[in-house]
Image (cartoon, rainbow, N blue to C red; front, side, top):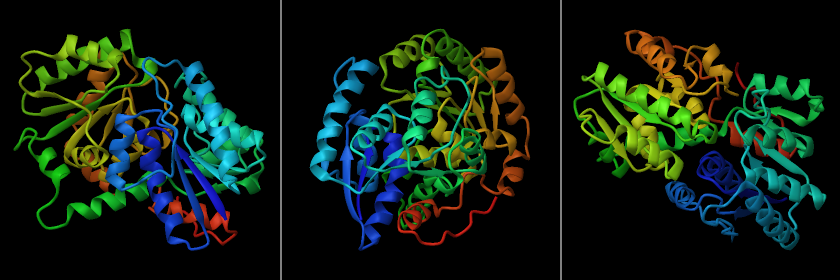
Length: 378
């Protein structure tokens, strides 16, 4: 079976890396890896972590690109790549513009599409934007819906997707975390571990990330005020904030937070492995990232989610996260509630990870090859 796997951003690489590895283990799978280059620097960083080399690199990124111009370039480039490769199936992940356009290009060429991480929904097309629309549209085109959770399965069924086309696999990010964690036990550690250990030695950490398009502007100012206040309230903690490369984020963060905050470290974005190790060492995570909401339960670290909606309510329902919005006071209140709870990590450690068991990639290829699936525990 000839399969083309398409990605363009760092989160896609992370979540598709186990899929690449599983395909390469199966002798009857012929895999073509296509990178669109939607995000250049952070994309290459993630590929380096997992040792992935694309067979096709479309390099579509332009400075100050708009969604419409990016979409147009992707349509032309991906259509050409698919016609030349002639795969039996195309796999896309998540909700990026790359994933949507790859699915549409395959649909136009009558190539069946497999959607990894299918069925996530907020019900609000403006939040997250444009990701919610992307994943709804991909669902209308996909042949195989690889749902990470039972809630995702229910969302797809509610939209009328044929139940025989929906497959509960777990989230591939849990597979990826398992691969990375194995490296940490090796003698002497590695660069990612050593770098993370150098931040505020001897202190407990709070990891902060913020980048979402809908949080750029006034919401980012609110977020920064909340972080400044929490730093002042908790001088015993070290706050580590890898600042996204987007000028809309960096300008506000530098304006609001650069200065004499002795327990706040503003750094450039770190690679996936370093980010994971920081999560594992953290007492609390404050973020608007979708991926981190799925990653933190693997380390039993509570998370404050700075968004008005999340398509990952499993974490909220199971006590792994609090949906706080972007208001300064609600962020501070949620963070302080979790910091004041001395038993929270112990409780979370006893719970089943709501996002999977590390066998998602295997299930995906078992489906493609018509093999029986190992059931995913609830």
